[in-house]
Length: 79
Image (cartoon, rainbow, N blue to C red; front, side):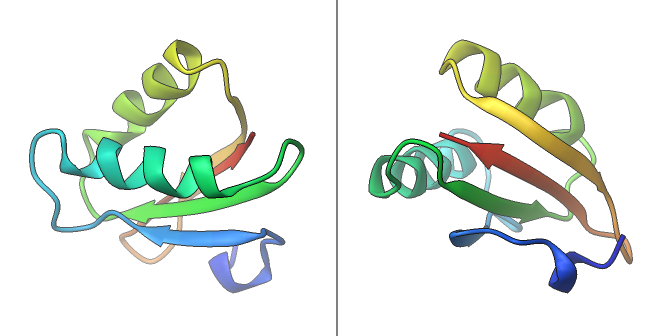
């Protein structure tokens, strides 16, 4: 899937972030959304494929879609 074709209300690039920083950035972006809005988060770190779904479960968020596009992982999260 082409990331540019994914409909979302906000975009967050969490690439290059270490430790808790990606999740701080995700939390900040999610807090800015109204219920029902979607955030598209991207990262180049393979570990995020399991970390972001776990974060969504913990925060009671819906992970609508996730995948890989051009060596970048994407996560579509609904508040």
